[in-house]
Length: 160
Image 1 (cartoon, one colour):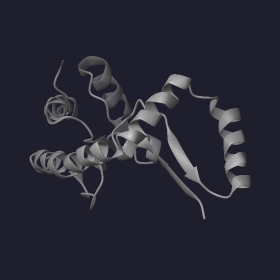
Image 2 (cartoon, helix red, strand yellow; image 1 turned 180 degrees about the vertical axis):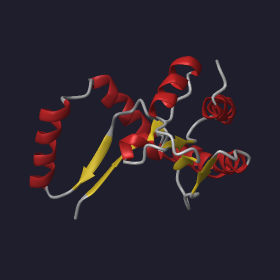
Image 3 (cartoon, helix red, strand yellow; image 1 turned 45 degrees about the horizontal axis):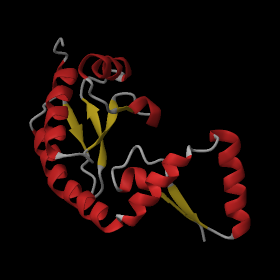
């Protein structure tokens, strides 16, 4: 049996490049070797912060659960009001995939939106779907609201 997980998406801790693997010892050693030769080693401070996050597991879980419910509803409401966007709402989680009805490759628009407005979504091109983007809602409600307003401006092509 092999189980891999991280703090990044489950708990909304993008800074915590820390995760875990449950597997037979030979497999974990092989994974460690591949990770070291492909990604290098994380700074010790990252491991220390990750360990502190594990200690706060229950509080982080409660926060993530709130985001997955309250923020999801806000994102769903926002998307329902965007005639140029659509999605298949995920049954659970902290992110989903959104498509633009224009059929346009959105990568340059998304990159420009990041540079001009500070809004960050993952271009669908990285998932083989260039007409869409991955949208996360694992953040404080105020930040989400600001981000959705800025994202709307980017998607309708408003100048900054």
